[in-house]
Image (cartoon, rainbow, N blue to C red; front, side, top):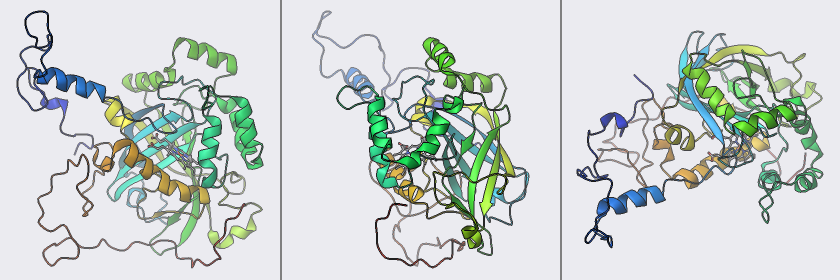
Length: 422
Ligand code: HEM
């Protein structure tokens, strides 16, 4: 099975021009006019359709991480962690899963330079046999804030001034001076690590604490880390100015050219784990996203490797329309109570319904590659062919059953409703 094959596709092009509805077009150069000089007739349907499509070519850019580059490849398990998780794609060394990855800058627009001092996104979509798993991370292992309530304000402060559309330090410092927990991430951002040389020489991190659950229901907190096999390289301020001055897409180009030349970028995946039964042994909160987990007491454990060996075929379909979401997990992986992660679970799918429409998960790059079924259907731009007569549940006529139950974290939750700073 080719996981990237999809239709409609330019593989089915006719040898001559047609309208969208397939009628032959005999002249794609000249509009239909009265006489030789015009005016143009409204009945020139081909012209109207051509302009109408052109007028609508752009979709809203991502509210953050608008500028990005993507590539495809595979993830391969190299070390057995089936004692920690029942995730099918991690079941044994040697198992390979197709992936699509999108790297990005965070704050500036879709066409902005890739040399700016800014965190970088590192988002991986695993097309597993049990559905997609999106590990939507960044290049730094910590985040500025701990509570998603602050995220829109934080982004407003970092984005350009709404009056002048110029990014201004006084606005950034004004906001962050109220949030000392952001200092840790600033030490990464304003260190020599702050401008990655390109996307190949960059680490990745899941940042938030997730959980792994094994068949018996035992839970471990987990942090995910990607380490590039070609090492980490960054640009100093004057180097960044030089690189960006001549090419504002240098990182996209580096990724594309490397893969085209057969020089496939590779990362090793490592995890750190904490048994929640013993989380009180640490002098930090494992769910606090502004803290790293010290590697001397919580060593990095190897899990697998990620190889990007195929360039995207089309930027719009496989970058602009790509939708990652931290809520998209598979059995054997679960969220933690990390408040930032909990907020993210809502926000991504919400923006994607706005940015791409309610059927965004039917788009080829976002759709699972495994068989899937439910009765969430219709809506704008539905292009799923369904021929079932029963679209309700339960039904004695529909043989589709519940999936096998898989373990989720067992702790009993109690507490008083509150809004707390921590
Ligand atoms: C509560 C905190 C956060 C909120 C509300 C939030 C929200 C968003 C939204 C709305 C998008 C645009 C998604 C789209 O249009 O497809 C986005 C993109 C992204 N976010 Fe976050 N985010 C948060 C924190 C984080 C953190 C902690 C990380 C790193 C672990 C992160 C990494 C990313 C990445 C990599 C993308 C780009 C995905 C892509 O390439 O399409 N975000 N975020």
